[in-house]
Amino acid sequence: MVARTRRDPWAVAALKRSAYFRKLPIAELEWLARRCRPRTLKRGEHAFEAGDACTGLLVIAEGAVEMRQVSPRGREQVLHAEGVGAALGEAPLFDGQGYIASAVAVAPTRLMLVPRAAVLDLCRRRPDVSLAMLETMARRVRRFAALAEDLAFRQVIERLARHIEADAARAGRSSLPGAVVDLGLTQDQLASRLGTVRELVSRAFRQLERSGAVKRTRSRVVIRDPERLAEIARGGALA
Image (cartoon, rainbow, N blue to C red; front, side, top):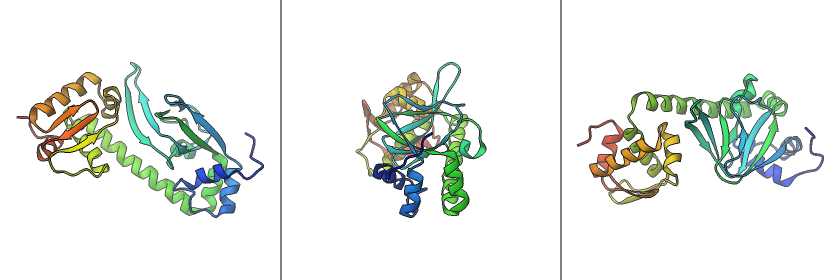
């Protein structure tokens, strides 16, 4: 990899979007930027595949990426989705093994590859960077534990109800009847998020509509009865 020899304002700006690096002095950011390599991905293109060797930390400067596991039969499970400012590849960066999942761009995306040696050197010198990475990895461990719990113990309709509730909360939608949530996903994409298949997502939507909890039009969902939706999300029996 060839180090940059000139100051690159775009690279510095991209690094400043990351919670790991935004508090670094400008001289440190420029030092790091000179060692980075940009990457551009089209929608659907892979940044890396599960098992690939980790060469560094990927910072998302523009766009969005999903981390996915794929079964031998081709069924996908989305582990988490990340946007601008997030980073990918912390775990293999530290343990020296391959990536644990595949990273797929879900929009036109620009990445900054920060070489492994540069990140580890920075972590040794800057405990605040190390602690920020540990905090991110701890949150992901909790997210993976919650995902494992959902897949092992919750029916598809419960997972779907919880997903709708979470999307409504993130969008700041009111919990009153009539709140509209735009899921922004196809049923195949939603199935990958919920760890199931399209047919079971369609069935779960029909059950939610029959229960009176929601009304659906394509990817838009109207929450008709928030209390009923919350009851189903907690595992309550359908009427």
